[in-house]
Image 1 (cartoon, each protein chain N blue to C red):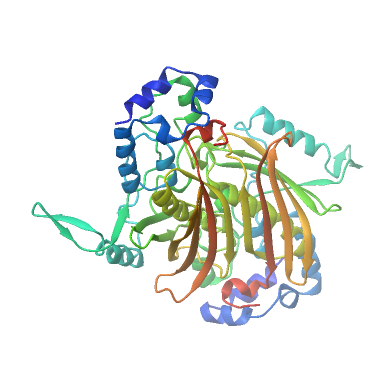
Image 2 (cartoon, rainbow over the protein chains, first blue to last red; image 1 turned 90 degrees about the vertical axis):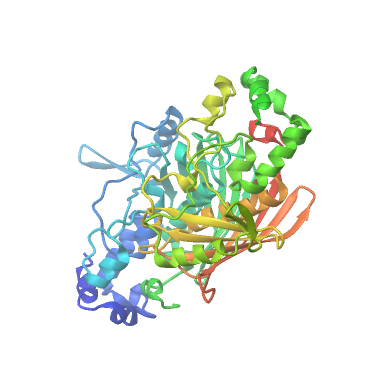
Length: 262
Length: 262
């Protein structure tokens, strides 16, 4: 689908790529048809890293239920899955609700074929921070559901035992990580390729290891290149508030990661 | 060393422990002698989780140099090590400088023996989020040096390939995690047991995977139970600014993690 971009980059090396990409937005870099295709992909593929690099991946979807999930995790998953938008039943599409479940991978660029420099930069062994554990349930178990019409999303998150901070409780950095991930997913869903510019997090109550919590993210406003997201972490019945946050994301061109300021 | 506290807790279960600890500060819970011992331990044992639970651990110190460290990491480590306060040479202490290297473990409560409820709560398999990888160099490699007189610390941090966010770059959540860890280490060094109340992080420039950076943390002010820390993440020559942050920590009693608001 994006082979022409891969080929275009594949013929360059090092500083050439950096120069080639400087100041170029994805809109300028891609053909209109490819761009429409990419835009449509961005609406179905959500994690931040997926939207920053336009190569597809056929990796395992980490947001599928697995044996480490607690009954509480399953219950919330089933609740939102039942509200998801379309389902194919006997060959017919069946409208159900305003939510959509987003897939989640552990890399975005597995099949990139853009030359030695990119291979080195991209690092074959690199893995998405929130999906870098082989054993299910040990760290981040989460699924993001997005509601396009209401410009918000909900993530159900089960915090594994390798995320410890204070004894028996989830590390503040792990909570920041899932907040960055979920707010970034919403921001990229709404605004395309983005990077985190600010996270402001108020920790209201310590979260025990093993907890299943909801991360509610909603669009506050978009001002030119800036997308402002609000976020709240609660118990699954929403009676207990663990964390509140705001996040600011800035829209970027593909060249940004190669040193361009655009 | 803290056997009497372990024994006292060991004779209780569940809600009894929760009630017993409610509103009790470590000062009230411990004998004067034990408290002096603990205070002295707090000065040599730094990570947040180490200061929140008063049991000693004989685990491996993860902040020792290993084969995954780059020459840049070694260079900064050697620089600050040479400025560390005392060194024993031929049986004599030799004063060198105002810095002190802090050890770093992957659990704080390995040897806790305080009954079934605590064992369950504490989770034997739990690991500190920043030290939960077996293979050196894959995730967080870091060492914290503290300068007591100047109320500040410096952390040298090498970001491994499992910390990816945007392709080839460190996840915003991983940066938040090391900032929480380093600012929390300084806050607990200065104020005793604390928990993170706020993190406000400005991401100025994307950080490539594999980077070695410095995290500079300094005390802003202490107001009653609140300890305010400032933080800056730079390249090792300090010419490039990656991230700026402020952090607020609140002093807590041991009972806080069991549900007390004190």
